[in-house]
Amino acid sequence: MAVRAWPGFAKNPATTIYFLSREIVVPTRGAGMAHWREALFAIMSRNAGSVAAFFRLPNNCVIELGTRVQI
Image (cartoon, rainbow, N blue to C red; front, side, top):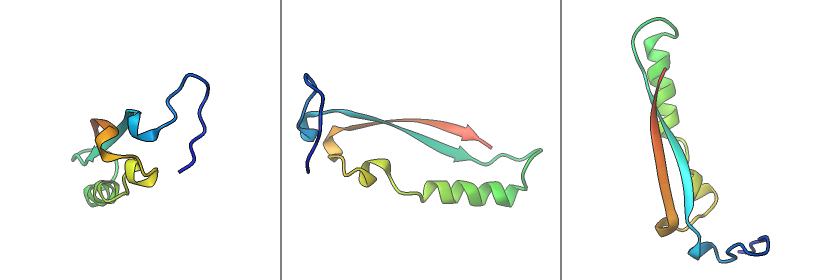
């Protein structure tokens, strides 16, 4: 894997720590979309591919920070 880097930055992806964010969608009852649509959207969001897998980041170098989003 060829990695371009700026001077002074780590050039080896295995020695770099990657910080990623993740949102967990939580359906709620109330005004807005129908509940079944919110639940379907939450399931689709949960089944979406991982950013770390998409960029082929080493598992032992990834820190994931998450938040719960109510829709």
